[in-house]
Length: 625
Image (cartoon, rainbow, N blue to C red):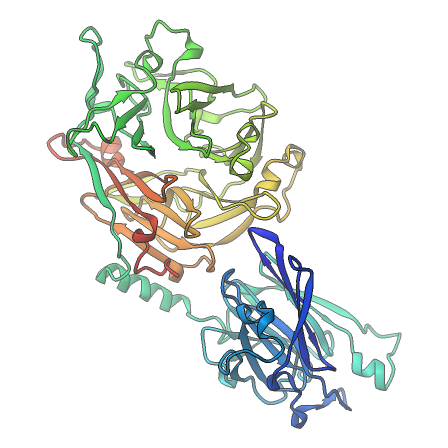
């Protein structure tokens, strides 16, 4: 049996059950609680290949359709199948199998396809496909596991050997790829048991396991090879072939200025007001300016898009008020903001962020208070939630500079979870709004800390920087994608794990935290965001002065990374990005390394806000399906 599940609706599952004796395929629909049958000549055994020799034993298995394997893409999957007594592989779209009206044989002539031949003595029992599109077979006559990269034509020279052993793999009768990408196979000497009898003094049953990415490294299935991937990226970079729907410049500033500031308010330094975060919601652009230097007037601000008089240097208005953003405000400390880096909007129209509580004074010292989680109701412009980090949860160096907000079912506003990466110590903080509690998980991989931006070499050993949340699955959970800034890799964990405080107390997290792939050299990323409408994650690639994209239905590898935007002059250091509720991508660039290590030229435009609809942004790239 092979199960085809809709990631967003578990009730829409289908099961495909080959019947090797009747030589047909049964299809069961969970939603309809109904079953139907397909027949096709390709499901019949090839009697010329129904005889076998195993360990000197000659026998015949004239079995028909034996195994079904599904391509990795969620939509429009392809079902690969074969009879046991056959050297060939066949396919049919799952959209055909799911349509009962086409059963048992009312399908179009070209729906079922002959894909090719695996080779001599290549009769196969079960098979499965990994997320890269590599198909693995158990070959019962050769006591081996073979592979075929489905991006290539099926012919003997494109079939590789993953594992072969007459001792441990005599008659490999079952195989499966688990969610991590590991290959599991079982052998059981079934023909010997049936026709000769097993020797109880020998090991007759074996289970073998191996990592798929390692297993195919030196085979023809490992296509394309790393050198080819590097060449593809080099050509894409030089020719710009993957940059399609470039972003539109919305606003730009040489320096930041504010509106509505009373004349008696003095002492702020425009040069030190460097915008770091941006979020758009219903015609308002929220801009965060952390206090990384003294004399920052306001850390949280807003621009009314309809009231902006020009795309050049629009004035910022402190949000929700100036008093809440001033360090010398008459308001109590707990009612004002100190330093905010990035914000995110939830589906309940609340603006979430962490006030790190730390700011730089005129003498260069750092002052502060414990970090605070905030939510502002943007319909009333009032504080809806304020939660101070508890003493048992240490926010090292006030390094909680971004958030990801998880609203169960996109409407349970009171059940929100906020996931907060800490780039200083590799932790993920989890705040439960309903329980008013916080716990943390630890995971870190800052291996790529060397940067070269705007002619400046520097090192930042930053840990976990950003979390991007997928759409919700049928059980109400999401995949949390995350990465250290100083890394080329991407990792994931289910929010089912993150929400569970008891799991955070384990000394080791086992396989819950997964490495899902690598983006490529020079691809260090700060912020990233998952777009629900396309299934694409957008990456702020600070080392490339660009925006990268990856469609999550594909394996994460350099060849599947696209470039949405890249500009070495106008797009220096994309500091933040996210997607609004209308499906528009928003990015802010701020030339920060130059400000941090050298000096900004205040006669040039240093800060820019960019935007484009996500579907237009990925047009013409490998991220577009």
